[in-house]
Length: 102
Image 1 (tube, rainbow, N blue to C red):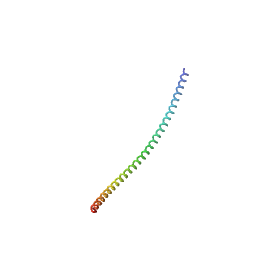
Image 2 (cartoon, helix red, strand yellow):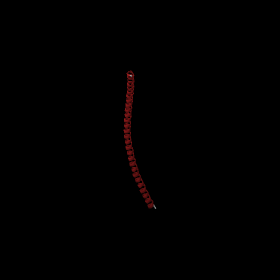
Image 3 (cartoon, rainbow, N blue to C red):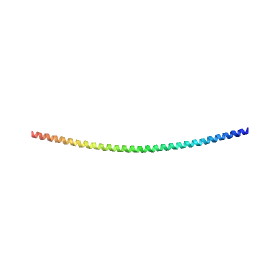
Image 4 (cartoon, rainbow, N blue to C red):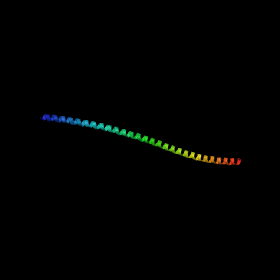
C-alpha cells in the first residue's frame, strides 16, 4: 500500500510538473502574442498619425487655395464693376455726342 501511495504521489507530482510547464509555455506564448499585438497597435497608431498629418496639411493647402481664389474673385468683381462703370460713362458720352450731332 505504501508503494502504491508513493507511485500515486510521483504520478501526481509529474502531472503537476507538466501542468506547471504547460502553464509557463502558455504564459510565454500569450506574452509574446500580446507584445506583438501591442507593436502592431503602435505601428497602426503611428501610421494613422502620419496620415492625419498629411490630411491636415492637404486641408490647409486647400483652405489657402480657396482663400486665394476668393480674393481673385473679389478682384475680378471689382474690376468688372469698374469696367461696367466705364462702359456706362462711355455710352453716356456717346449719347451726348450723338445728340449734338443730330
